[in-house]
Length: 115
Length: 112
Image 1: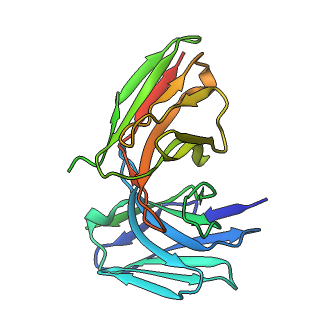
Image 2 (image 1 turned 180 degrees about the vertical axis):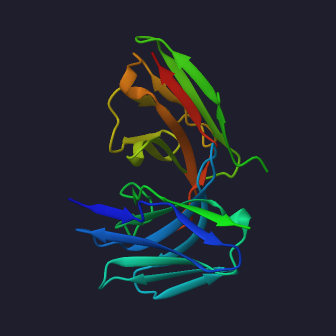
């Protein structure tokens, strides 16, 4: 069956360091992959989208890579700040039409950035 | 710009009661979605809509109903509440193509 795995354990890092979060998938051929941030009691907020034919995407301090051979995406936050503390979700979609009806979600990784 | 607005934020229901979770968006998005989020389960799609008058089932539709009479509104109806429907419910919308999802802040529902 299709499966997405994210770091199950919480990630604790020191302010200023780079946080790296992992999203692995099996039995799936995604057309694109998305990363969202979720704060307690709030809905997920979109961060980045990367397509199957893209290796890397950047936005300010954020970088995402996508390796369809390894079936893995890495999400990096450079120069991390306590305000980056949240749960980060990855989501994959195999439907190139983009209506999201086949979007599947990981359980998320909790990141804590300590001052 | 309010984005996606969900009401109520919290609700406690007794088994067998019914209720409607409200969702409205002001971004003129054609696509709208209802998800539930349970601990250890991730987000699961309940129903979605690709435009006014068009709805379809997602992965976990049993026990729920939806309607989409306008572009802005996408209410979710629970007819006979069961303890298994205790969850956090999120409504989301998106524009066309690979545009991202915009989520509301959720409704926390407890069925006792």
